[in-house]
Length: 186
Image (cartoon, rainbow, N blue to C red; front, side, top):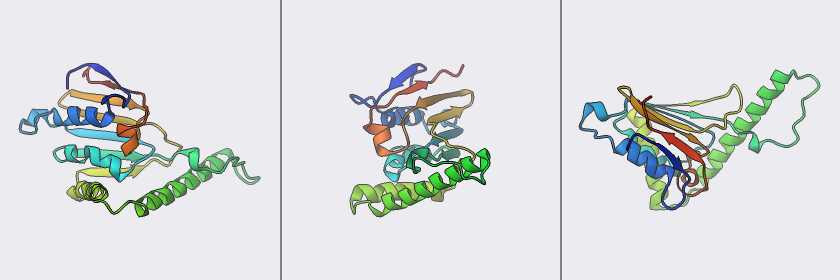
């Protein structure tokens, strides 16, 4: 990947999936200086089908961290503060409800996966990366996290993509997204 700033909108082949593959695959894994030392991803939404687009690129990266956020869009509206709640307690309750809804939605999405080779391949890719042991997955629970960022670095080189694309199939390939990638070490 050349050292420049790029705009990624998932239109006309300009997908985040392609950009991530070029960024991480464009590094020659036979040259130790080319392998990223680390990859950091923050996303509000996640799906195995989206993860499959980057799973192969994670094999040679020794330190991968995935931070999943909670999005308030699944909360009942309105959700007023209860009489006995402090503002902080109200926010924490809302986050717990959002996380519980997100876990239920992930389980529902898992249960609705079609019995296809593509679905099986997506799940196999996720399981393989988790079993490899080079990836940590955490939930951000202090407040709502709706941010999306993909950051990699290697020996002072690296790049960041920040924007609106979640780590889902649609977020990486189809949705009209607004992402800005910067691959200049400075």
